Image (tube, rainbow, N blue to C red):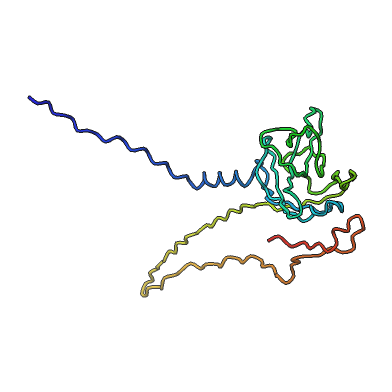
Length: 240
């Protein structure tokens, strides 16, 4: 007798990748937007207060590029008047093992694998620096040691720089819907039927409204001393 063959089974098709949940997607996007855990992402920085030979730095938009090997964020600015300029943290700029942590403004792109001497020259050469232990962000204002010389002479000076920051903010809005159940209550009298009585409702209180005409939307600085003259005519706008 012929032996019956068992029906062939088609090979199992590869399992399709499961779609990423919204929570996982937000987690990934959040990791890209916030390079340092627990800190808001400063996606743009602008410098103000440079010395005359470095005035091309003032007003440049330093845009967030990512993080270096030690987890610090770093920024890059592009200009038609100079090569790309970078702002980054270096724990030891000449790899001498006894260097002081600092934030650096330089034309050399920082290494993304080294944890010290990020420009790889075994020297502390840069446009400006400020000694600062916090590797998560540079100081918003402070004395920077800046190279203010020319092609024939090196001239290091201390200048008070201000870093104008723009940060990303994620706002979560939750809407709660309340369903109100109305009960019709009917009472019976001896000779007549009383009409249904409906419970009274109270309108929710309105939030206090701010009069836009009384809100200061921007202001301009005037009368700064010569040392802070770069603040004159600087316009500050209200953040929405």
